[in-house]
Image (tube, rainbow, N blue to C red; front, side):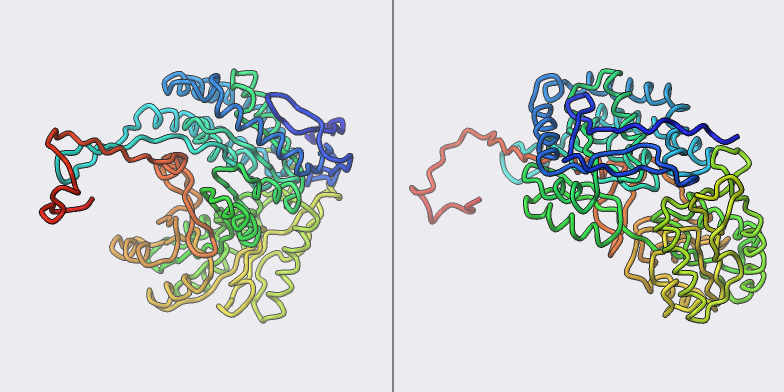
Length: 505
């Protein structure tokens, strides 16, 4: 049953624990991508609005209510926030489905795991120990870690809450504060979460939100003189621009950028299972994921069977109302994104690839204004084609033939991106060889899209730098201070016996 259309609200920035007016009066429409209808309007925040949020975050970081909170009290609070998140799951997944168009089954399954990110990092905060370092001589050398400060976080439209929580959980557990700039397409669940956390006891100023366009609001945030860390998930060019700005103030950076995930399917793997993983990897989230299985490299002996079965599987996927539990594929986020996907279908045809499924806009009865695209598969794709090299960010995958392991790796690594890769094989030795040799920060063997708060997440090359999740992310939210204590009590005078002393430092 189609969800009722909510009243159109004008929303504001979230600063100091409450929603406030922002911008110069210019408003941005937020649309439901399944219908095209406007569901909210938000301001386009300017530098003064960003500065207000940054000052709030800095004051909270330095204040006693948050900055003075001891580790155990903070861990207890973060666990309470996880409980509050869980208590509001129904409202959150429905709002997210309305705002980004993912089928409700997907949204519910994804959001239900997010409280674990907060619980994991609360546990890490309690278990963390500083180091005592063995050094030469009569010295005690140890480290102290201090939270880095204010984290600027620019989040995308494809997984609004999941990508936010990967960063927010570690920000809170480490004692940092944040200013978040969500995608102008999908700001609503970010605002809702800030309200939930504030009501659950998060001090004002710890979690602030500025709304607006990336080119203006995002730019003002990334180049703000007072940020200590920039976290951005988005396109590679956006990462270059924001990263260059943040580098001017020597901010820490974590960037999860574009991807073009190669999936290497060897002939010892079950073809039906490989096809089911291919459909999942390529079409979950309408293919709007940085780790979308967008390049399937298939061994020649099973190539034709794989293509035939994948085409049939793709044709069976049900598009429809995201709130209908029978729906398997929702719309892409916007008319612009739909047009981009269709343009790449045109590039594939023009360059001689074989369209075996989809490649057209789709009309869903009752949702004629929605941004639906048929799930699309192109076969006989070669490495020089645009659809092999460039990120589409939609329900779109290609299939390329290879003869042996060496050719599979050559094709997989023929890309400027290096976020994720996948291997389908029953040969244990081959699985480890290929995982070691492929250019990627994440490799799945006989799986796809698996994520865990304890497992580092990030890429190499044009896919970015730094890691989210795991100890790696936790440690990057601290400055490390080395403290050297002389424990001997012998006399010291360099200038009395300079020639006889063995070392200067």
